[in-house]
Image 1 (cartoon, helix red, strand yellow):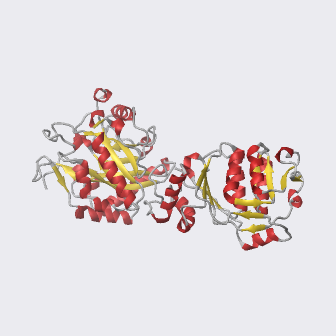
Image 2 (cartoon, helix red, strand yellow; image 1 turned 45 degrees about the vertical axis):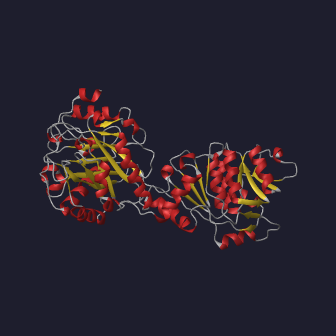
Image 3 (cartoon, helix red, strand yellow; image 1 turned 90 degrees about the vertical axis):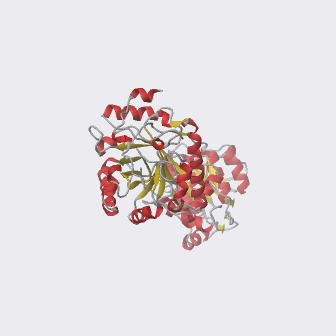
Length: 517
């Protein structure tokens, strides 16, 4: 192996002039599908009662912005016919909550308001009787409808007519995002799904892959049929195709350390940086793998009190090292044998530590080097980092020039790595882009951030006094492409003084990935 270079970070100055040009998931599951409840609903009933859809409809996303339309849409997806239907005014939260609970227990759908959406759905359901709070005028919903008024100030349950369940519902799952504002449309949707014996799962962030809890809530349904029977409430869940793809992933895609299949925003990461057996390149290489594991866990412990989400320990391992000599292949980069790195990757995985493989490619390209570590990148807990500082042009040498890379070359890695994730049914991977000068990533606005298989992260690599580091941070964030997460590096020897964990997490925006060199 050619002799490694001491990182330019040990000597570089960050000059303003050169830069100018958690929440853990909360789940709620509720089901009234047991036989005892169904028999209770049937007792004493006549006619066809409520007939739920015995064949699950294709997955759908319902926009809750229009309360009446949302309630009608969920009813249409769940119920075939209903002799009795509850109708409530969307304006009174307390009254709506009472009616919703009664409707769920009675196994009848709940609609909202007396407009066209409700009237049309009552017609489709072949409804004969509307159950509503006293004072709500339902005359506009149809002349032949019978009316059952409920006195909510008394005991409205005593006035509820007995209904029957003429046909049980197919398996049904409603996804709601508890971080979004509670709406009457959501209350009605939950009531109707509960009436059908379905399950309601809260999915913070509107992505069922987000955490271990959300995956466990969705997986039982997904393992039976991920393409049908799921209703998501809110545009943030994406379109029906996106929803189905994400639900499918909960059934057969492995999870990240700490749970879930999406890297951010439900965790942050802290990593010692360096290369095994090379102390000069960073703190990770100063000891054994066991010592590095202990260090990473200590970093995470130190940061956790200052984080709103779990802090995940990680490694950032330099796997191709910028070299002072051209080497046999002439690329001025010493590629470490993947089998030398493998014990570190496997030990980290057993300890719940995420691993990022860092590339310093010299005169070759990033994709060529990334492919050398394809087998390691097939592990669910292994991501990739590209360091343009060490990406040389054919006539350049390390320590004489600071390298750079075109966005087009980064995009070749993005496409390859995202396809690797997809074809191997892997959870989302971190892809870090190191930068401390704007010229290091050319045409940065063209970096492809559309592949959701990757969490693309910009790592601010500047060191020095605090004003210099913050100037670098602010400059790198300017005109940053949408969809890129921010990361920060603390230099143990070069920062004057080094930021504490509390100070690091006081930076705005709070870094998602922090490394120590």
